[in-house]
Image (cartoon, rainbow, N blue to C red; front, side, top):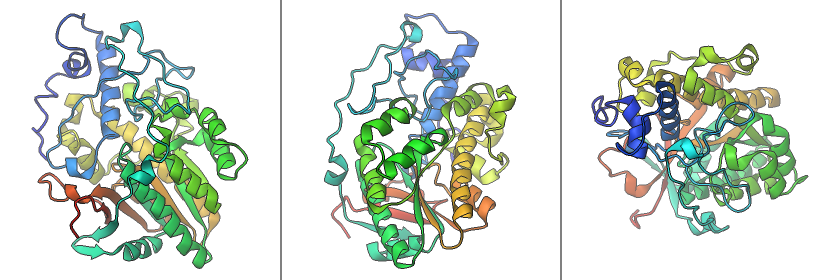
Length: 389
């Protein structure tokens, strides 16, 4: 970790959250409250765009927001973890920025091809420390763990190819052992479990899933990236679990803190462990900030929101494992930061006393990068994009 790596970017939270986005001229400064709100939103989005090869010398690069600044019915904007591009044509597009957002609307990107994941297929192998695992050895190793957290970069199609392969291979081994396998999705929030289950069981079609889960505004990545994993689970008859906390809660925490929740909102929270030193160092390290200096940059509530994501997904997965019984396994699809050993895996183990394997999906070309680190991951799933063994 390099605590001064992004101090130039973080020199002023107001500048970060407003001027760095709209420019340092031509607009009046927002209120302090609005600046803090935008800081939290940008920071939460930043956490959803991290991967292991960024960790050594990471820079917090604020993303240009394009979503509406108008609160939804729950009083919150759409998920801070959602991408900055709208979903594909199969789902409703997010609203354009409001007039006072201070940011011109970005052009709507073209939808990805339906077969983008299949077209992105690459040979793959595993890496556990210094031990290279063949693809077969990789799946055999992961099949031994009651829980496997498959860490993805949301907008990389090849990562979703690896996840689709993992689902198929783990399902084959679970079936051979007479065990039950479920697939857990960060991309769907817990209140939409019935909708996701209806799709997985063939009761509803894709359009109904997208509309019923509010996919476009609550996740928003082009659905072509996630269709293959959902269809694989559906074809194999696997339970599909909606793991995540609703955005109204996580965004409110990130903006105004845990104490701002109402009594009913607090009742939705799982048990939160907020003093895990390794997790704090990892998350704040993604911003280039030491935990002791997090408050200076307005990141303490952002950390609580991130931890709420991790704890909720761990809680959702643990409930299924505990209810299903011995021999059950869950494959969790989530962002790389959520699959760090100190994030979902450790929190799931705390609830179940079962081993949870942390993985990160990476391109082979990334392994040689000077800022790459595999610390905190039991296994790397390596996509061979370099043509070398």
